[in-house]
Amino acid sequence: MNAQRTNPDRRQQGLTLIEMMIAMVLGLVLVAGAIQLLVANKQSYFLQDAMSRLQENGRFALQLLTRDVRMAGFHDPLVGPTPPAFYTDAAITGAAAADNLGGGVGDRLSVLRLNDAGIASDCLGQNATSNQAINVYWVGDTDGDGNTELLCRGGDPIAGNWLGPAQPLVDDVESLQVQYGIDGDGDGSVEQYQTADNVGDWAEVSTVRLALLLRTNRDNLREASSKTYTLLGQNVSSPNDGRIRNVFDTTVVLRNRLQ
Image 1 (cartoon, rainbow, N blue to C red):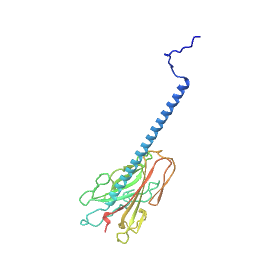
Image 2: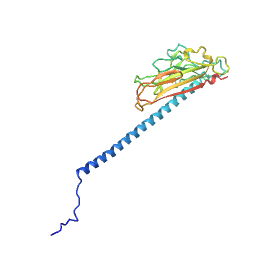
Image 3: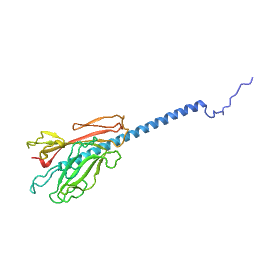
Image 4: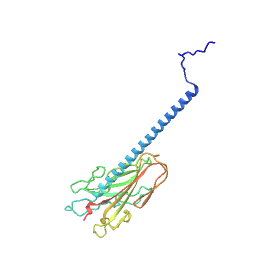
């Protein structure tokens, strides 16, 4: 009887159908994992970038307003009497300090600037015709795209006219709230805070509270749900757009009112 012999040079060639299917499944799992990791990293980047911009815009907006309010009514006491710190006249339509402009955008802040040495200029660098100019700040939508901004417009209180159109200073600002600290007895301590419409004597204002509501420039960064934010006692509701919002506030002492 002859024994069956095997060919030592015989090698397996190709893959079976089952092996190919297993390899394909493993490959798809690895690709899916890589895609999921890429999407998660991209979403994390968008979140971090949006939060950084939100914090930067909030700090810049507060710094800008604080610097202007702090120097409101600044003058040389040897030149003349103390001027008003805020503009409350109706000579320029829409320029006077006001409370609750409607639509949740908040208040209007009107700061008087004085240059005893010459011609005054506004927040946009535009020169007035005299040594006085006003900076009017509020939140609005100048181009009608639905995105509100912190705006500034300069005025000439002596000539009684605007110096130019409003210009956006900070994007994605939804509300500005302002309260004025009243020092009625002149002892250097604030007895109460009032809105612009309830200030009886503007010469008694020695401090200003500012609050801003800002949002991220991207939507769908979190679960879409409406939320109410409180700014100096005023409630502001946000839409269901998935944006992250934050409140920035500060209290500013008017240097020109220090005793």
